[in-house]
Amino acid sequence: MRDRDLSGWDPVTLLRGLAHGLHLAPGYVDLYAHSLWALLAAFPWLPQAAGPEAAPLRERTAQLWDGAPLSSRSRRELGRVHYVFDHNR
Image (cartoon, rainbow, N blue to C red):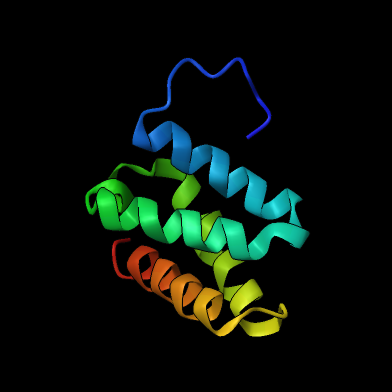
């Protein structure tokens, strides 16, 4: 999310930024989980447009859901993100 050279904040670009940040910012998992969940709620077509970001994001959400200390809300939202990407392969 620190990359100020992004060409636009369309949903796919935002998804890429969030997916990349989820890997790099473990202290902000709650924020990223909610942001990803909200983005998918606003743009239900996004998993089909995610391209190569989908598989790593699906794997990372599963890892975090299984092992990271998450709030109940983040656990629920991250589970939903994982479900959406897992069922839209």
